[in-house]
Image (cartoon, rainbow, N blue to C red; front, top):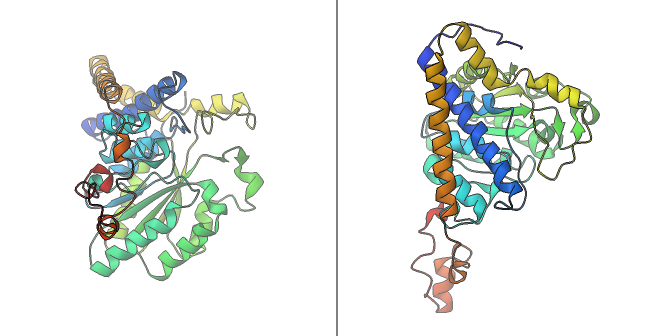
Length: 349
C-alpha cells in the first residue's frame, strides 16, 4: 500500500480527529448510495468517496465566521462544516426537516448558521458567489475568509477566469480550492485543457498558487492553513490545486466508460483514510480499540441520521409557496394568510 509522503504523525489526538472526519464523510456517502439504490433518495447524486482528505484538511483551518462555497458534490463539505448528518439526509429525502426544508436535495445543501453557501449545481457557479462574499467582507472591514471549492472542469468556464481576475485585481480575501479529480464528468483533463497544471493557470492572474497531494490529509491541512493565514492577514486571494481522485462514478447515472478499472484500482491504493490509518498504526498512535471505538461512533451517528430522515415529514402542500413569494408581495395583494411564516424558517438561510 502507498504511504503518506510525510510519515510523521505529530499529534495523535488531532490525527485521530482527522481520521474520524474523513470516516464520517465516507460512511455518509456509502449510506447515500445505499438509500439511493433503495429509491429512498431520488434525483441526481454525486458522492465524494476518495476525496475526503480535501474537505477534512481544509475545514480544520477555518473559523466559524468564515464562509464556504461548494459544488454539487458537497455532502462532505456540509457535514464537516457543521451541518448535521440528519439534516443532510432529510434534505435528500425531500423532508421539511432537511437543511433547506427538502426543497434543494442532494445538489443544493445550504445552511446560513454555519455559513455554508451551497451546494451549487452549475459548474463554476460558486466562484462568482465566493468573490461577492469576499468583496462584502472587504468593504465591511471584516477579517473573514471565503473558501470556494470547485472541480477542475470549472477551469474551462468563463466564470473561473472572471473570478480569478477580479479577486486578484481587488485583492479579495478568498481561497480558491480546485479539487482536481482528473475527470470533468467523463472528460479527462488532458482532453479539455492544453495546460493541465491548474495552479499555473491561477498564478497567471498573479495569485499565489500551488499544488497539493489531495490524498494526504496532513499535507492538505498544512497547505490550507498556510493559505488561510495569508488570506486572513491581508495577503489577497490564494489558490490550492488539490490533486485527488473520485473512486466512484461521476454520478449514480454515470456508466463510467471513460476510464479503466486498473486506473481506479491504482488510485484506491492511496485511499486517504487508509493512508492516515496506516501512518498512525506504524507510529504506534492507533491502538485497535481506538479504531473500533471510532468506527462504532461514526456508524451510530449515521444510523441516527437515517432514522431522523426516515421519520421526517414532507412539507404540506399549503406551504409550497412559502419562501417563493415575499411578505411584501403577499401584503400588497391583500393576502397575508401565509405572511406569518414567510422568511422565518430554516430555508431562510
